[in-house]
Length: 401
Image (cartoon, rainbow, N blue to C red; front, side):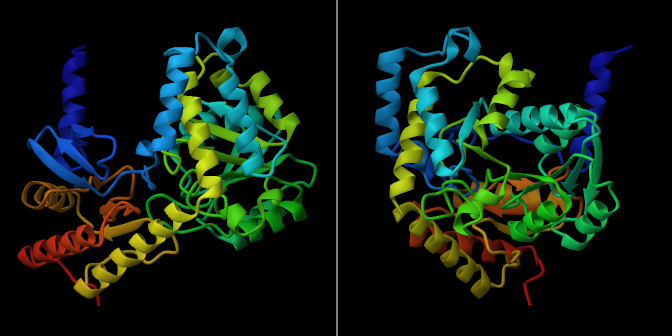
């Protein structure tokens, strides 16, 4: 078999339907975000699609902590957590995250993907006859973790309380159950009915597993996410989050009871056999979490930028999904056209927005996913809105009603 020919054919198929992914070679320069140097076109651009939502990746307190951690502890952790890899910064960060979510304990992972995959995969596999009820829009990391567990899985309609209850009602009371869902969904920006899901969990004896990766740092008076904002964090058995979005560094974590976190620590292969996060990374994340627990300025600036961009898009009649979150999806509905708009925005106007195509979103819902932040100025927002309006007119695209 000609293996490379097979690989090339598969890639040609992605290019033919417009879903091939191109990577932009960006050079972030601390203190200049959301500006970055784009090596492909040889000039500075404004980034509108970063998940560093609050710009904490360049915050002075974070950088200072990382420099200090590097000077003190060196570059790497030196091993897995159980083989010399547990550092003081890891322990301090886990304690801070547990406190942030009002939980007994927390457990660090190398990424949010890994924390979902390892935690769901471990708990669902080891609870005998467990059934996982998974929201239809859940992230790939949750889906893969559930699949890895080999537990029975039922997919309920996205954010549909009635469908979830019907499925719970049909299961025997004594069967272990996990309701797995997200707070803010990253592509449409909608938010789960967390309270109602918790009510069903109480009624039918299920665990609740909440992914808050697109909410931690951004919502709640301390940045604890949507559950903290709504005063219901105590009702969730597991709150999972990331350190690579609102907190601006890298890594993932879970928080929950001491027994649950120790159980995952003791049985999850993805934790046991992974080299620990470098101490300097944990130091930077710790500084970011601590800063955002006491500072509202970043969240206020973020909310203002989102509201301002939505208002300008409305004025220009650029179609975008209405939602209660910070994610602004501008719907295009065609993969090739979405790529074309992204290219034109970059080359002509200096705005970088990566197109979102299948399989991240269903075919026919391709979009430009915009994430304005507190470091985007009013002039930036006005310039982007005008650029989009120009392209919409030149290409005779449908305007919002």
